[in-house]
Length: 232
Ligand code: ADP
Ligand code: MG
Image (tube, rainbow, N blue to C red; front, side, top):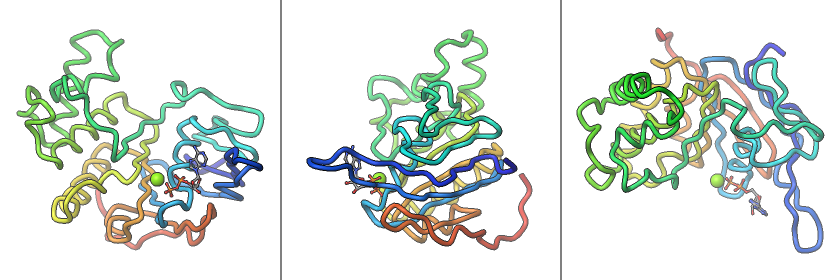
């Protein structure tokens, strides 16, 4: 298993009224460490289902999911979500409105000693360019700033893999364009391996090192995007 994330012949089905509906079928993908992959496809093609399976919220009917050398999912194996070291950032995954930015970012670090946690929160807020906004509540932040706090919250526990499900869909197009570039820079600065799904081709091209097109639960054209060399 040379790739960091690998999905091999994955099938995922949902229970329908009369029979099981196959949402994802014969799905194979490999992503190296430190790279950003992107699945592009129309609504309903199975993007969220793939991410939920990687995160451990959907069982597999067939195939396997590996992270590094570790088998996370197969038809007979299912590592629980909290043991996967997989982080998620969802478009509809709003910040906790009654917590300020600092408390939102620290949410996943509740078991750490206070000093260690404070240092990590400060580091993450600085990473997303919000070092001075820690005391602000979500309603005091713009949509783009809220998504950067959500990104800091997802990165804070240092997940081995970050999943992003249409994270920019709720934003206006100017904010989306700026934030897409910023988030790519942040992920690269953190050396974060990430898999993003979207129905927006410009967003996919701006973010990804490697891009695949999804259609009816299957993946086609899982190819590198040519880019000028960049330092990590
Ligand atoms: P996308 O994220 O690309 O819009 P989804 O992964 O959400 O697509 O959905 C893929 C297919 O699986 C769709 O046909 C959808 O209706 C179906 N589906 C998704 N979630 C469920 C569920 N919980 N129960 C039954 N069918 C579902
Ligand atoms: Mg979806």
